[in-house]
Image (tube, rainbow, N blue to C red; front, side, top):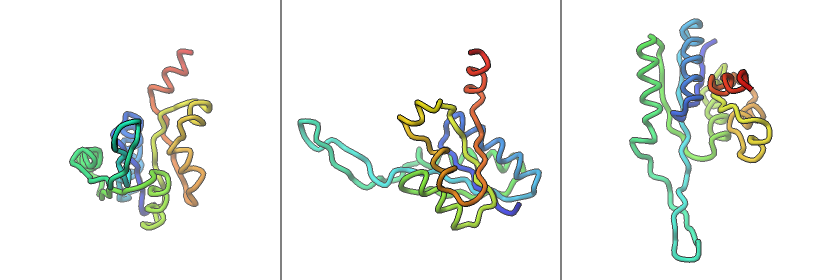
Length: 151
């Protein structure tokens, strides 16, 4: 394995994906690229009566904080890492960037929503599984596994 792409957004499930991806990268002596996707536009109020407008999203320090944290964890684990802040639809951008760098594996976290919730809310991990033409590893959140075990 030569390249691993790990998607992160700072959520607990993506933190688990980062940890698992780093373990795998260390075992394979493979570098990782961390990606985080921000919206291309921000929806803002544009007057009364619920009207809204869109303005281009200007990246902030908060947008790159999950990338910075992941890169620090990679450094502590002795894994070579790169970061990339992407703009647009998370599924499309992650899959396209994985193709751009010819990643051997995409690692993404899953919040563990059930089928019904995923159908209503959408799911980045599910979208990546559907769109990617390369291997995808979905790391399920421990909290979801624990909740399922207690049910």
